[in-house]
Image 1 (tube, one colour):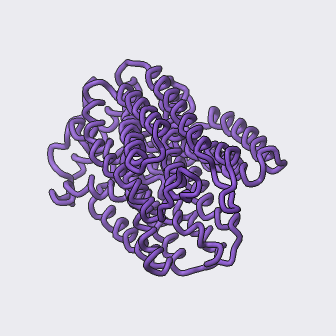
Image 2: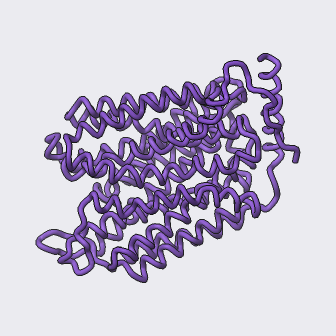
Image 3: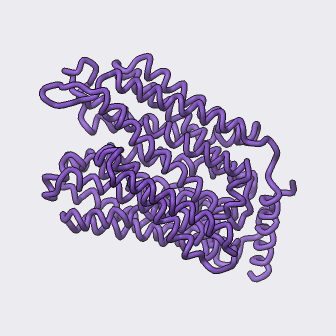
Length: 494
């Protein structure tokens, strides 16, 4: 396949400094997005007291971000393909920053939930950034940059928890949001300055009906999954949400197949290279997320349980920190494996490593150093898998649909994570005992959760190996040609 050629000379208004800083700026945006999603976690036990709201209401500060992120990621990805990726990226970062400012200014739970919903827009930062990297970088630099960008989700999550815990422990909780507001404003300015707008566009009218249909279907689906444990899986509300999701998404699928410019190109999604990549993303998201959920609860369990370590939230965050550092270190290795063996092998290897990490967790979940080793092995596998997924998408879709296709892939990870949260909670609730008058999960419950996540990781490995071996698809070849044409046109205009 003929590869797109590097730009021979920089376009007007660019500078060597800005070109060098583009990748670090995009990566820092991904890390900041992940930090913003996790900073509220240490606050959850205290928010009922601080806001005067019930624990069930406070949980919506997490649920609102999950729902808005799932809905907005494919929508903003499509908007980036049509109207400009840098423009939409900076808008997403700006919404995230506005949400953080609102959180810093209020103690009202209603405003906090709305502000956290605004912050969910930042979930589109990674797919938009990956699309920009595809458009702007020559092939020899693209793999490592995309791998780094994919790893920022885990890096930011590992950094966010101890950072937030330290702020909450030693300062007023609003200080945490003022800090993230300042970082967000810096991120918006740096992105606008250092990142060039991509000339690759897909013209046409935005599919507003498709966006509304997808939003309604996803809200019903994810709301049912995230609240099933609280409302009851057999309750009328949860069953009604699942039924509504099935009906709305079926109608949405029918509408998308008939739309002239659909929000999501379902004919592209149903190709084996793209569809199986999305399935692998869902399964990997499920397997990865159980690691963070279970580790945090396990090490904080009271010592009276016989297995718990009774660690503080700060110490818990530090236990997860080696995994974040590992993700940063291993992202270049992922790019090298993908270049030598192909991204499907990297994805399969990553899923297998995740399963090995859970085997370590099952073998020993009492000693702190073994818990850290097991969690770090899972993080290493996640790095390999998450770094390979965007590369698979880049090779299988046209350049003009990169952001929307990667947005759908991130959406599948989100659905996997939400399902993992619900499944792990169900397992731990079913296997619990009373310690000091308080119900806590048993060690058997944790081990079953590890076994479940490890089994899903093995299924993800099988899905990865099922992805066709052939090189980039014809659509990707056409997309690369469109990229070259757009670059040439931009150069002539410059």
